[in-house]
Image (cartoon, rainbow, N blue to C red; front, side):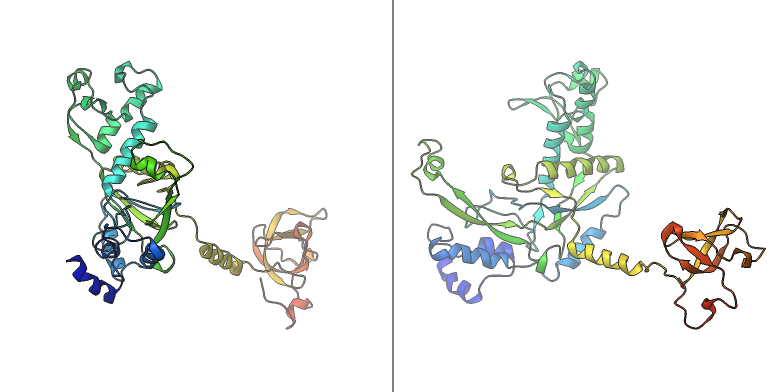
Length: 398
C-alpha cells in the first residue's frame, strides 16, 4: 500500500499540515527511515520548516483564549529562549518524534507535561532536604518545606502521601502511612488536585512569517557503544553519525492557561514559570532545550516607543519665545517676581516685575517672554504693549 501511494506523494508534494508531512507522508526508505543519501533528509526537513500555521488557526486560538473567563483562570504568554523538543520518543521517520497539535499542526505542550514538570520541580526545589523524615519530625524551615513534598515511595510502594500545598495543586494517592498522618491532624488519603493544567498553544504570528518550526541535528559520536547498550567500549575510531530532526524554533511564544481556585492557580503559575525557566520542558533539557521565559521586547516595539516619546518632546524654549510659566513664591533680593517654565525647567526672575499686575499671586500660571534660556539661570519678561512679543514676528507659544 505504501508503494502504491508513492506516486501520489510525489505528485502532490509536501502537505501543508505538519503532522501529516512529518509522520504519515514522510518519504521513507525500505528501513522505514528517511534516507540520508544525497541530503534527501535535509531537503525534506527544510521543506517542513517552511510550513506555517494554517490561516484559520488564529480564529480557533482566539476562541480558546476567550474561554478562560473564570475568576481563578490565569492565562499568560511565555517565549522560547531555546529550541523545544516535546515528544521526542514518538515514532518518527527520523527516529526523533515531535508532538504538535493534532488538528492544526502547530506547536503545543501537553498540559500533562506541564503538570508533571511543576510537580517534580516543587518537590525537588521546595520540598524538605530529608524526605524520609515524617512532617512532624522536621524542624524549623524544614517543617514548612514538608507542605511541598511529593509522595514518598519505597520501590513501587507509596509509603506517604504529599504535603498540604502539593496535595492542593496536584492531588494525592492513597498511602501506607495515611492513618498516622490523620492521627496528627494532617491531610491524608486520595484526593484530586484543584488546578487544571491546560495545553500550552502556539501564539499566532509570534515569529517571522508565522513559521514556528526549524530543522536541527544531533551528532552521535559513539554509535556502536549505544547500539550495544554498553557492550563495547567508546573509542576514537567510530565515525560521527549526524541525525537531523525537527524542533520548534527559539522566539516562538506559547500561551499557557491554568484553571482552579484563585489562590491555587496563583501559586501554580509562580511554580510553573520558575520551572520552565530553570529546568525547561520536553527532551534534551540537559542540553538547554525547552527553556521558556517572559517574552522579550521586540526591537521594532522599542523603536516605535522611542519614536512616540520623541514626537512628544518639544524643543527647549529660546529667547523671544512666549511660554506659560508659574509664578513662584520665592522672590528676588529686591522683591521681584520669579517664575518657572515647568516642561523645560527654565527658572529665573521676571526682569520687569513692576509690570506684573498687583492681583497676581504665587502659583498663578501666566504668559511670559523668555529673555534668557539657561536652565535655572533663565530670565523672563512680562509682555507689554512695547514688548516684541506683541509684534507679528514671534515664535509659537510653548
